[in-house]
Length: 95
Image 1 (tube, rainbow, N blue to C red):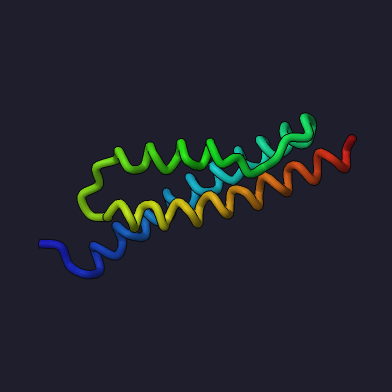
Image 2 (cartoon, helix red, strand yellow):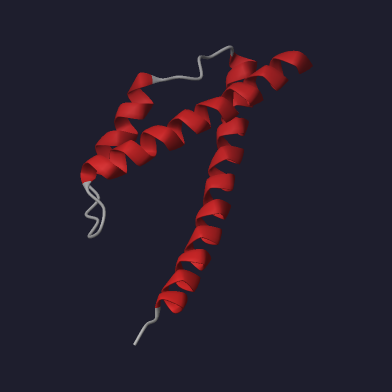
């Protein structure tokens, strides 16, 4: 039988994995920003966000609702945009 402590340790392990994945996602958002800086492209692309949200709606999660998933990814995308802007700004400084 699981105890609260065992379950919390499992959550801690998952949290560490999530942080690693989010960090990787932000790294790629930054690199995309660098490329967009070279091409003078906008960071925010509505079609790409729609594509992400449409794909999320197809995911069958057992313990998180579609609305919760969409809310979570709105925040993740917002953060990714910030990293993309940083990458774009740094690229513009190099050129």
